Image (cartoon, rainbow, N blue to C red; front, side, top):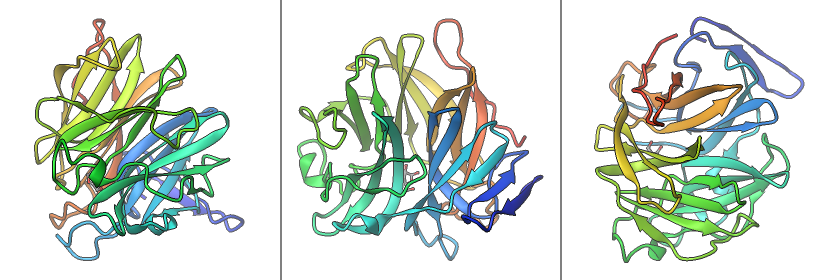
Length: 308
Ligand code: FUB
């Protein structure tokens, strides 16, 4: 890999490598990174971009798992979750996110539904952050027909981001063109109330919800080609105040999907760009990690994208 080395452990087929620069993986294409901090490690869940020919659109059949204890040495775990592990889905492993609750790990995913036209959101569950995961419901959690009162587009129900507040209430946010949110029951596999729209300026997709020092942050991809913008609120139910741009796309990718985490006292911005494709293909993406810094008033400084 780029400026590093990697070794494969024959015992379990996990691959361990040292990433000394961005992108952190350059032996395969990965997009839509979602990160989870758990038990002293960062886990990154990402869709595998296969796109066999330039500009052939997304070919994404599975999601991969990386983990690290130090943001330097990473393990890519052998287990992958497949879009077709959801028997009601046709395929298309678009953006996802994992969260832990009561010792179980819930993986919220975007897939193409087999019988309801359009994208849907499903959820899989595991006893381990590295799987194996199994479909937790046997049916989609969100389908396109649940949101037709807001928009008729087929791909508005994508890009789930999940969050558990300090009072234990869990929330799912998602969307393309229109951002939505809803409460989740404690079982994490059922909605606990109505789907509500959120108005955000120039919202495209890729919402990510997180909390820092009493502020809620809703970051999202804006316009196309995408830049990542964000809004802040003192209340998870809003109103959300738009605060500006966090980063702008670099390197041959129209999309830029981000995750924001805190790990061992530092904040990180994890995203994809097109930095390892040289053929202008926006469907062969690469995961990058840069530091994220807050100002004293809670606003976030522009991300300095690095190759280091
Ligand atoms: O990877 C497929 C789609 O591209 C994701 O769902 C969007 O966020 C964009 O990154």
